[in-house]
Length: 285
Image (spheres, rainbow, N blue to C red):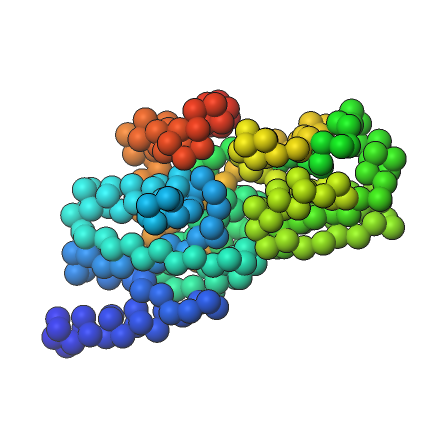
């Protein structure tokens, strides 16, 4: 088979790389090496600070720039030209399932918490952020000092959760343990959770600390119930299991003392999250 014929076959296979949300340009690491270049697709769930369109209409954010740094690293260290195609998926569960079922060359960035259960379905990069999940309400509810205060303090409140996330599981655990007669309402983004909890007085929710921090910094009337903090969360880039790209991205994270310890990465945190929040998160790395 000629080199041209092989290239045509690979291109046709690339076009057929289909996830649940559409067709994605994506190739295996072996094919990218063979032809000194190729395509990857990075799926993301829009998130302020991490994957968002700025005032100039440009896609940017901590995880978007992380993946661009990955492409630059691959080009510099392996002498291949890597083209990134970014695609937004609004639903977290749709995003997650798409990556699970994707072909090699599809990555996902949506601040996905690394868990042993998810490792049965996905491959993860090393952690790029240690998160704190925080329990919040409107500030008309006084901060509680013990979770056993929830039945009284949260009486009449409904749980609000981003469907398909660990935060949904946390809200359901609170309902089961403390508020069995209350209900849960599903949201479609962290921004929706922040907006509803700040504008109304009848919700409680879990969000990542950067969502809470940015909202209160902008004047949102929210309170963090610190007794409900969940500290042991790490975020990773996700990929389908069993793909060679996992070795490449691990190499990227490990090079030159570790990517997350580089000034390049820390500058991304400062640029997109602000200095104060960035320093808090850097202290967790």
